[in-house]
Image (cartoon, rainbow, N blue to C red):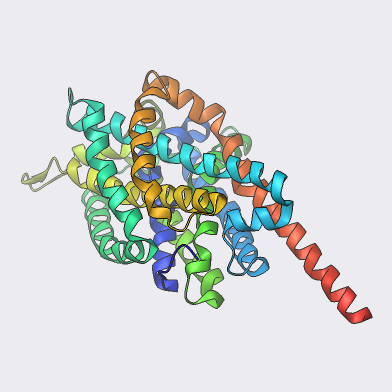
Length: 370
């Protein structure tokens, strides 16, 4: 086994929560309200239900393929040649998610925090920490998440309560003015870009030291992350209204700028930036880790760590060139990325789970006949 470390069920729950939040806390309000308008908060609830069904499927996958990562399960199910092709496509998905997340970091920092800073400089500083974390292994990543979670919750609660005086209920009315269709379209965005990305944990589940608690961890971590996204979307609508939420690239960051308590507690947008950096660090680290681990298993290497540095440099090189600007990136994100995520977040695990259950039933039938 390439990875010797283990994580607890509690650490798995925290990692699921933080990855579910990921970059969604900053960019999802704009994407979802584009379709659902003032009903975006309803889309979040619908998306959470769909997300819970997806992660329940992932927990069943872990039982169908015990002690096997997603790449190992693919090779076992599809055989050498087809399995290799599907495995390569899967790890390329992990790589693409990492590249997209890195691009989001660069665009946010250069547009909102450090204008004029060269993008490669920002990416290099971030990726060095990610490479270090991935090389230290899943056990260290799990422990880091336990350190991050109190900090994240503290900052999130301060920001949420401080903005309450500026909320207006009238901004979320009328409810379901255009029917259920826009709400369902918004729910697709929420489900795809938030909950289905937890498919990366299929590369990590064999290293959970309490296998019987995997389902419980999924069904706890996903709603916790979903609650944070729900509150973020609801606050965005109540403070900014649907029009400004849709037009603003980073609604949550704009809300943090508006905070003013007693004339001294204000301009605390660095808080939302820190929250986002913490959750995005976990997301990029887990996806980079899944890529190098999966590629190492495919190439039958003895140590996955040798791939961390070159992969990190690939991310730095590709992130600035995947899209000429944020508008182009956002268009791809909204119109095409959803199908890519559904392919690897639902279709692939569902096929593997169906085949695994069929083989298990067939083996039981043969055993009973003998």
